[in-house]
Image 1 (cartoon, rainbow, N blue to C red):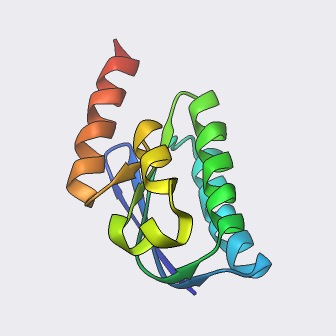
Image 2 (cartoon, one colour; image 1 turned 120 degrees about the horizontal axis):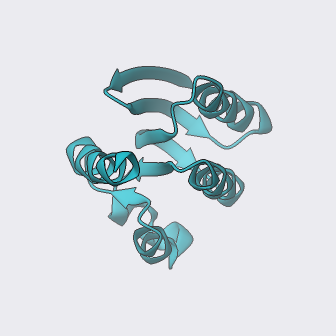
Image 3 (spheres, rainbow, N blue to C red; image 1 turned 60 degrees about the vertical axis):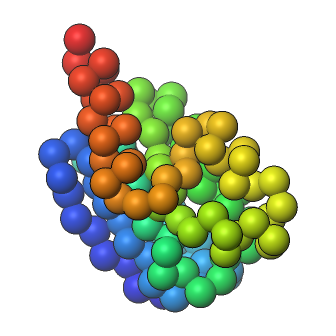
Length: 122
């Protein structure tokens, strides 16, 4: 699994390529998210469009990371292909959209986070 990162303002984009299945792969991504928290970067978008496979344990780790970031006033957004995971996780796309976590592209998550950041600074 490969991970790359870029920053736009207060938003960190993490791109994941490969599989997100094993404990080591999850730990690598979690460490990347935790490093954002250490740097006080609380708005994190994880682009999963190039993940070949992700299991439910990996999804649970991302949901937990979202909760941790929300407690700090931020959020985690997932850029993902809805159709790809619809049959694997059945109701997951609906749950992620309801929590405001799932986005079709990076521009969409960036705009949502910009709005949340504006509200946070008021």
